[in-house]
Amino acid sequence: MSVGSRSARAASQLNLREYFYQIDLQGALYLSDVKIRNMATAYRDPKFLDFFFSRLTLRTDLSSKKIPPKPEDFLYESRCGREVNFIRSEDSPVVFQNLIEGPNNTHALLWGGTFKTPFHPDQVYLNLDNGRLYHPLPEALKAVPAPWQQVQNSGSAQSSVPALGLLKSSLVQTNLAQHMDYESMEWDGKQYALIPETERLLAEPVPGISATPHDDNLRYFDVIISGPSSSPFEGGVFKLELFLPEDYPMAPPKVRFLTKIYHPNIDKLGRICLDILKDKWSPALQIRTVLLSIQALLSAPNPDDPLANDVAQHWKDNEKAAIATVFETDFTTVNMVLILHIPLDFISVHDISSTSAKEWTEKYAV
Image: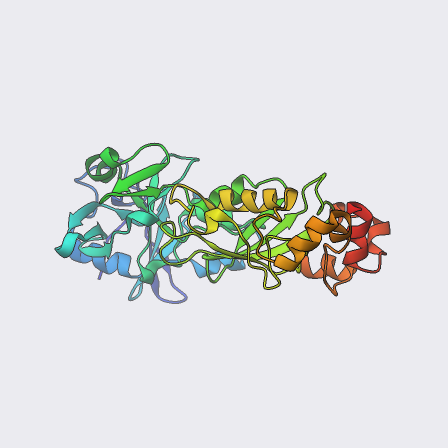
């Protein structure tokens, strides 16, 4: 394949020809030095576009540079034989052009020239910074994130959103706008959030609670809750695990304590007696609601609706003595800091020298 361009330059050492392209917000592909950009100057041949986009990758040579690349740089490449095509995009290099209906009430997104990828309404994502809508990329392009995602992921906290392709504005206006409000989209009788809960949790953390998704499975979360002030558990730090089942949000999250806790509504296995985790669950509720409810349960244990009957009886008979045995764990305070990665501002130097978590609890709770 040979494409002429005034912006081409010879890479004589490797006998390669290099070309430079631009992709706009509508997904149109141009040579970067074209002054007038319209349908007449954009590449439109479906076979060429399929060939070009099937080889789309991130530029590996940029990762070796000491200075991080900027979003306006040529961040992508498409190698076609002895041609290396460098690509700069105004947003994602993949722009989904249209939404078509398939068999059995399924839908597919069109991109490139003739490529299709299944449309998943539950995975449409709204970027609050630019107001644009996105959809996860096909599996073959999952390592080609949008420029703003690369900047976002270069910080200490990696985004929980997979690599995304931009939904073309005309596609949104024609096919999706009538189904949407500000934060959600109704599709086939179901309501879907446009802003992933994990993004909201990371952007707007709940005071006293951290919830971090696993890099290799975004349905698993490591949760840490600090004991609420003026509660029997003030001064304590608790590690939990949270899992979103496949049928979430129609079914509630699965949550349990990993740190041992002496609580009438939490048993020795860490299971939690909470109505919204069972029959009172609603798809309108969120992870944030669950974590706040668990935090509230630490503030107000309810021995009249117990999961741990012996603890509940102890609580009723002698609440002060029950509180004194709140932490049943072998971890020293120092180990809790190391294993749970508790920020040092949670505790003082004197607390670190305490011999056990149980003594720590007795100090604060009795």
